[in-house]
Image 1 (cartoon, rainbow, N blue to C red):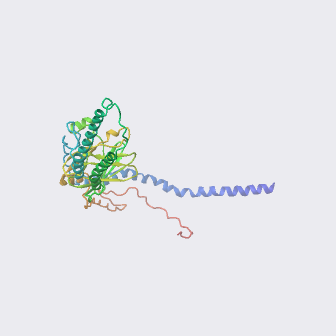
Image 2: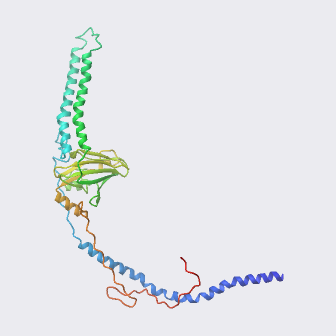
Image 3: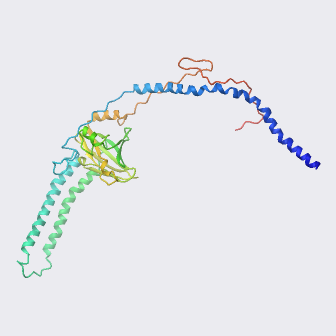
Length: 364
């Protein structure tokens, strides 16, 4: 029993020793608590410092030269858009379009008219010449070598006549000249995103409501809030892609259409030879609002294009954007000094105690 009491007394002595050490160490921490109210004004001074730092930035933005964008062109009813009074295709305004329209009007259309007329006449002649009343006893001929050679060779010659100019047109379409301008077109559900990577410009293009389109004198469901703008005569390389489903970007007046596929970059090109506003639509079924993501391309002069680029905050190829001036560094202020523009800091606490020393070696 005595041994048990001795062990209990020793354990109690060791257990009370840390508490006594904490009790004796707590009084020196009081000055730090008393100094806390002096640090409180630092938070109240933060908004003032933020407002002072924001003022020079606002002055710098207001001093930046603003370039006004050229006035948007009004569309014409005879080019670049559907016309209820027109028979045939839209007038082309690109070299590929001119060649394609010539191929369509001078080769394909006359050829199909001739073939259709020949087949119709042949059917009528067979119906009359070989009817039952004129031939009560049917012929028993089953082969005609000359006729079989003709109806085999003639279609082959027709296809060759179509293939030669067609392949030449395809070669010109997929072998573009060096590009003067690159535009990346991204299809989204249901709007387009245009990016000029060489000029630092990017924006979205959405359909305009009918009332706004009517106020601007533009056709219904073809007007957009932000047009794609290109200079006249420039070779424009168009890179298409998509963020969600397959879309298709195209403008009939340029004779250009290219699918926009997610995860893939497709390329096409056009060269507009006449200023104006040219419309297109998405040509691939892409969801509920497929019919509400039109395309509007405005072709302007090179001078107007340069102003448009500047109004968008971009820069012409080869020119580097002007760097914003660096803000002036705030002067250092001592604890007991201050001016009207740079007050003395209020959260300075005087050191009243000597830092504790240690006998441990320095760490590396």
